[in-house]
Length: 307
Ligand SMILES: NC(=O)c1ccc[n+]([C@@H]2O[C@H](COP(=O)([O-])OP(=O)(O)OC[C@H]3O[C@@H](n4cnc5c(N)ncnc54)[C@H](OP(=O)(O)O)[C@@H]3O)[C@@H](O)[C@H]2O)c1
Image (cartoon, rainbow, N blue to C red; front, side):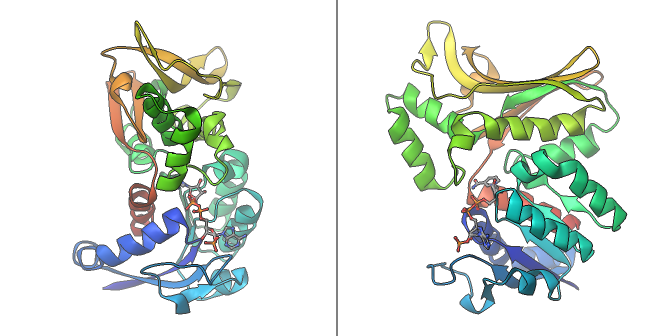
């Protein structure tokens, strides 16, 4: 049995989900993967918060204690760009393997961080940064490694999709957003969800994986101005699409009317869907929970086990 020591940075929605999954799946993970996960320090801001199922003795507010202590894998679930970036750089400098769900960080500093990881002979797992439980990073990196991708896109933001489908059922924008926040799948700053930034960040990560070509243009429109979510021809969805254009790739995120009967029209609530068009493979559709504590924790766990 291999003992893997994990330093967990952040114990909010996803971090607490990860702790729970590690507990719930402990014996199966040991039997199937021969790995005993040992969550050591857990970095938080406020150690006095109620955290059911989390051993308070593991909590610390001292980042260096978590980062520089004995561990094999650093799991970054703090969010944001600046502080999370400092933590990840330090973890890589310490030659730890890093797992993160932080698309904002990767969309902003991904190239630099992946280069630092390669230089240090370590790795960054980021399956959880795009589309929660949908194993899209592995699909692109492994399953479709032999194909040329013509386009990739779909519904990449669960909060916007939840709001649009609730509005379809008669809720107001504000009520639907409040529900998404209460249920734990809105970003801490929900502006990133509703203005399309979160979808654009994920799209950029997918485009970098799918195409060996530079991003030539980015166009992002969110759902704030959407007043009608159902038309005679279809339903409105926030659609993200990356496609090949002359000299590179164009990224577009915008609310679109999806015709009735189209697979994206059937994707409701916080679900995500990714449509990939491969030259040889043809069209693939992956649908699943794109956010929330446990679906995202599953993707984090996959990277921890791979690391
Ligand atoms: N929520 C989702 O469904 C989802 C889905 C996919 C990806 N993600 C990504 O996963 C990451 C975490 O998201 P989340 O929703 O779990 O966030 P969250 O609920 O806001 O949790 C953040 C955690 O980090 C801690 N923290 C924040 N800033 C800190 C600092 N400066 N020093 C120490 N601890 C700090 C917080 O401590 P306290 O608990 O003491 O406040 C909290 O435990 C983000 O990058 C997000 O984009 C989230």
